[in-house]
Image (cartoon, rainbow, N blue to C red; front, side, top):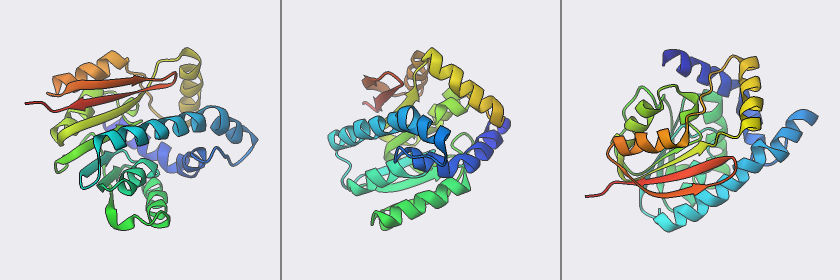
Length: 220
């Protein structure tokens, strides 16, 4: 697990500016522009639209949200703009720099607290809604990460996880191998079982080509 943490931190510190550009379907050069426009960025945009709709259904106004592995902060900012008080955590300092700038530009800096930390090794105060968006695939022990997130969940845990699409798996494995980072394509059913084993019930599953969004809830 410690190797996964260090590799994830190094990878995302280096990737941070490019990751943020992907949300704008832009890139630093021709190759990154191509990848962001037709692969990574396209997935990010679709995922954000679905999350916005889901957040509206959950009614985030006045609720607390814990965004674990917040990256460059787009989901945290979205939740804050929809009325939530957000505690956002990420392992990569450069990601957090971009996230803070984004919250400030969006006028929600007073609604989001950003913190450097590791979702796999730290406990966090309870929140109404806990998010793991594009996170568990970077840890071999996905059940452990989900268990920690579930422990902090009062009502809902939302997990967005990458689907096992063969050509995407191959491309991403090649990219991660070049950068020396770890990547785990956990089967979606394993992720579901991990959430249920942590005491939550699967309330909704949204399946897309490149990812699924799993909505768990605490019952009883």
